[in-house]
Length: 266
Image (cartoon, rainbow, N blue to C red; front, side, top):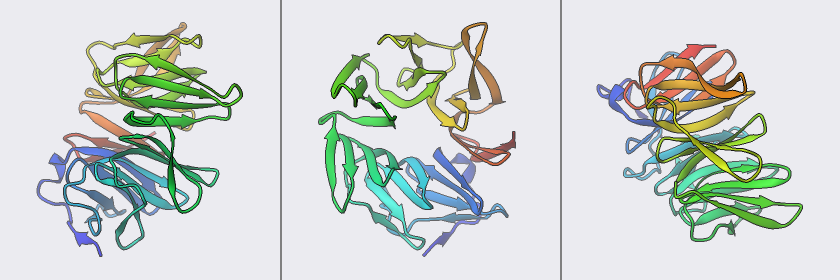
């Protein structure tokens, strides 16, 4: 069942936190207002059945045609008619399905599911916000910094930064992160990280789309680039706070704090 909310009067005021684009429509998650589907005619449907009213959506993930919502009330999957809890009731911040195994970042570590049950994989007791699963490494962003697991050496390395690392990306071989202080964290490939600020911009998150790494800030959307061996932000869309971004074909979609869901041609 879907609750039709054809452009509610206050839809522009919703603080959207996540966006996912498909050939059939766009999904947008909000902080405290649920998940919405926007069709090609700009009709808004609230996907509310089964999702707790008080749940804040931290991230949406769409993989293998399955939509998941990482929320303050747990991990949920959309069945086409309603939301069903996917086995985790603790707050969830990230989800990925990789090679048939499911991974979830939670309030209590990184969890993994290969059959019918979830099990704690790593970082017990730490609040995990994001992770990257690479052939050699598992990289985890958490409430005090970054943890890196080397599969070949079977060892963990801890990088304590006194910062919450809310999102992660890899750009030209460098590990990139966004902190809760609005900084960009840039690895030097030798185990050290530089904290970079850009003219008073507060960085919400970094995300990889194809060959590009996008940076969502309180002043708009940017992409990362190197100019004369210096890391710079190239403007994509300015004028409003952008919290998340997705790309489908030649179109880029942005979740914003005050301007709903925006799209531009790229």
